[in-house]
Length: 111
Picture 1 (cartoon, rainbow, N blue to C red):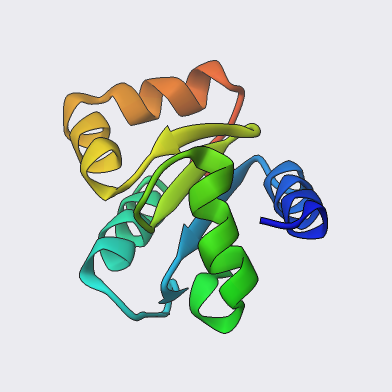
Picture 2 (spheres, rainbow, N blue to C red):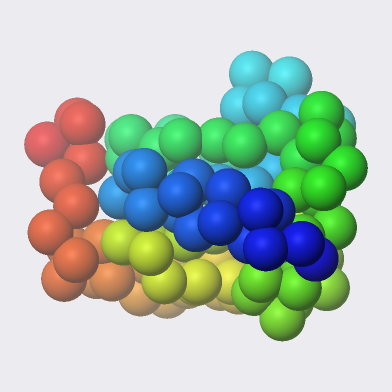
């Protein structure tokens, strides 16, 4: 990964409290895993920024190096890597994702 790609990813992660790197966009996800995480965030009414990795190959490959995580989607909260679909899904089911968001001061839009 080039330094410029790393800097772009850092800027993206810092640009919003909740960032989801996914395949496609929330209204038209291009894989089931991305759809699942976007749906969880939407269900929690959490405002989030989505990045379509399919539209930028440097970001698609760079995010895997940046997080040291081999798969997409990837969720970041307040600049910290949370995990991929399985982790986010398990955290959601256990109530841990809601607790994490609350601990980080992120208020759901529906609140």
